[in-house]
Length: 457
Image 1 (cartoon, one colour):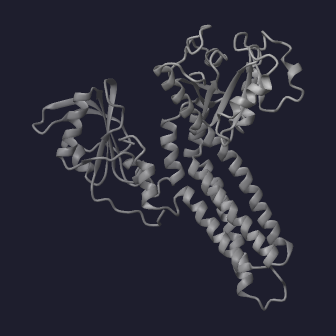
Image 2 (cartoon, rainbow, N blue to C red):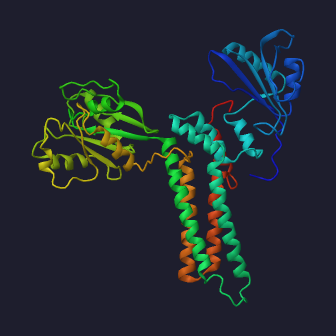
Image 3 (cartoon, helix red, strand yellow):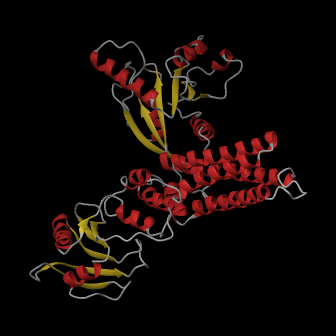
């Protein structure tokens, strides 16, 4: 972000509440024409930051609606500009009339995310806080919502800024040592620099660990249930969701289409996807179902490969290997041995049970709780609600690049005693960290981030 905020010449307006019918609807405006528009619509300029009940007037002074008006004086507002909120009745017609009146008075319709973008560009929030606003709105679990609030309050930004400060101080120290080579003391050769580098790397590990949890909360995880027909995929789907979503019969190939639903695993959103049984299909509909199943497998974060250990007595390992060959090697897999209630002696076939094999009975529920614990461990999810903040994939990428620069610089110092190269790597680290908060950014990145917001936010 720049030291001097930009000056926007136009005033923007949008409905800040969802479209459709509702008890209350809010029109939000931001910009220098707010005072003129407010006087024209309400007949006066209310006391800042106080809600006043008034009539909302049309061009001919007829009443459009009655409601509350709240006026915020710059820079003490969300966007850093004059802001006006008109709280009326939430009908699409009355909201449309009120918005049309604002446009008639000189405002223009805001683009998606433009209010938040102005808040960022006017130095009211940094980029990670701006993203946290959208993440709070889009939260699909209570834990994700609470984590988004922590990011909005600046917890993630504070950690990034603390890391940046340590990197900056070290870079200053290194560059000072380079600039004064006549000093008798070898500042770069002592253990102080190495110790500072090791401390920074350790701090990167901690921040990245917490950010990874935040990314899991935001993005969720897609789990595809795959396997042969009648392996028990639909039964497991119903058991995990607690709903009667998938048809369960003894007839093979009942599931023809994709069935999905969300569950929360201690706050972690999981999208469960039930698919058609993998086999050589006999009719057009099942062929399409198998094709869709294979496509979901390719795009999954993890595959739950369901194997019917009862029907495959004596050849469980061979059947597992056969099914694993139908899953892309880069996709993580959990092998779920189902129907252990019908075949309690299955362990005699497997001497050393792999860590990613989980025995269950989708019918009785045996082993399902262990499956959930296995999934949390496999996905790297730790239930630590306090201190968790929301994060995005781009944040993890920036952290990885920043840490990589520090590690590369450390190697250059130890192996080559190259202080200049260490200083350059620390500079690259600062730039990568700056991408998270928006100190270093591009117009293209801003466009992609804010265009994903809803209009009016």
